[in-house]
Length: 145
Image (cartoon, rainbow, N blue to C red; front, side, top):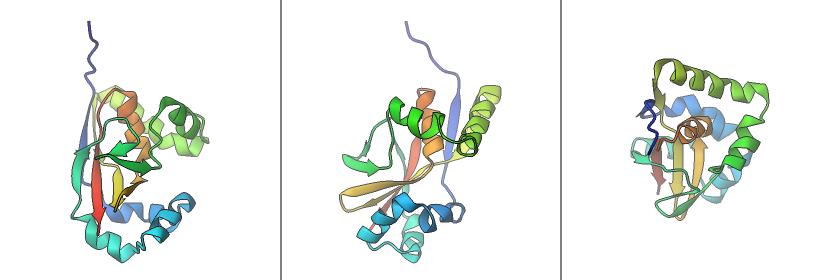
């Protein structure tokens, strides 16, 4: 017998301007941008060329390793469940809303892909929410020329 969840998440195209902090201030992501010569203008012009893609729980998408895709439960326990309260707060709010209503509409997490390397640009908590409820989330996959 199988248990089936009645929860659903509708994934929407994200708004890049709401994720500026990830580009300009996130210390762990700067190396990716520097290695690939990614500037905000380049990302902005490529962003609309992205597409919604399913992202089953994994460290890879389309066979390419995704840096920062902490996909295992141990990763979740380390980076989110035991994180400082401020970081967990938005996850807890999403989870509570999903529990109360059974459905959410969320901006899709963003993955940047440049050559044979990818980066989870934004949306780790949104990924975890879907993964923890047995759902396959959709991400906005942005190929960077």
